[in-house]
Length: 290
Image (cartoon, rainbow, N blue to C red; front, side, top):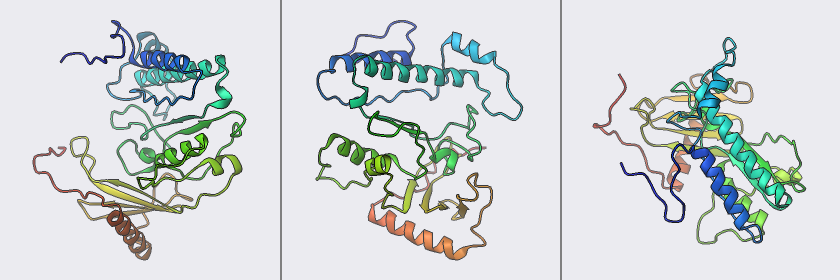
């Protein structure tokens, strides 16, 4: 394979670590645009497979003791998180050095929970991880920083979703939302600044495909308040959890609560139809796990 190249970037330096290079480019972008409004979207490839890290950091974490029953045992994975943290710190320091921190909204989040199938990390007390419909796969860090506007150190328990980022950013910039598209998300600024509750009680996830050699099969999820229903398409089975009292999803309540299953399943069907969601289909050529 030929190395990927970008016409507006200088070529890679031999031995350069990708996360460091991404931070270099982000810092340079901020400095170039310091005198005007800018939008920086930085999606680190870390933390992600292949699990590759800098040798000195691997050695650092490999020397640390592994507490009994602690799933965080992967030194390379920890070293990748370390590099990502350093990159984030460099970006924030640049904003500080340029006097831009109080006029910049910073959002830090992830697209899925930590990968447990390597195993690379451990999301306990949340169940499972990346690609799965359980809280270890769906719940992710979401940190917002805007000094002078959003109270530092505040913890908000209200469930939100990445679809909320667009209307939230539009509010922060005092610009209208795009009118040519349906916007599914909600503006989070009133919640974060004034503590106003969101006008949303129900959230949905739809995963209509196979992943990891067929070990993860198609599913949909509906969360209504703190009640969560998982629908598995291959088996037709349901799992029902009370997240308020069982955040680790240890007790499936589906069999003992058929009325709740029926209600949430009907709500899910309406949402799938309204959104024109693609439905899963069996692919005989797709390998299944042994």
